[in-house]
Amino acid sequence: MARPQSSQDNEREACPCGGISFDDCCARYIDRGEIPPTAEALMRSRYTAFVRHNAPYLLDTWAARTRPPTLDFDDAPQWLGLQVKAHLQRDDTHAEVEFVARYKVGGRAHRLHERSRFERTGDGRWRYIDGDLFD
Ligand SMILES: [Zn+2]
Image (cartoon, rainbow, N blue to C red; front, side):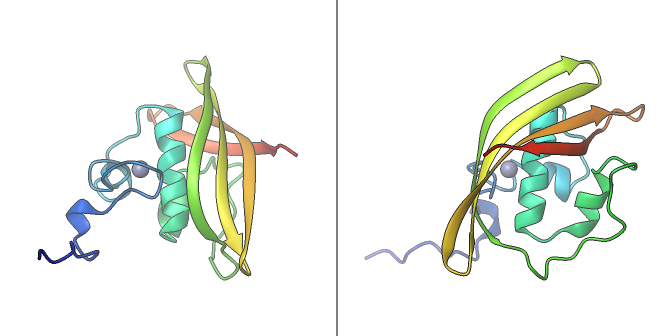
């Protein structure tokens, strides 16, 4: 009988955003410094950064005018999954991404349904501005 695959095998680790492999998905942007080509790719990598409590990446991909001074994860929920509903490219430098992120707090499951706004600055990088919540 074969041994079950080790969950420690980082090469095969699924991406929190829903990608098959973290290494082939958001790790390109979070760990290897590639520039996400679309606002949706950036949004997925930011969700993954929230799951992995990566404050430097989140702050770096936040528009300067709306970025919080610091970010901590003391009250962070347990994120359960991401579903991207829509990606609206407004023009070359503005886009919106609508998504549902499921999470758990104190044993209860919730969903965050948001339409986020993104802008692309002169350095070619998309950054998160802010978002509107549904419900
Ligand atoms: Zn991913």
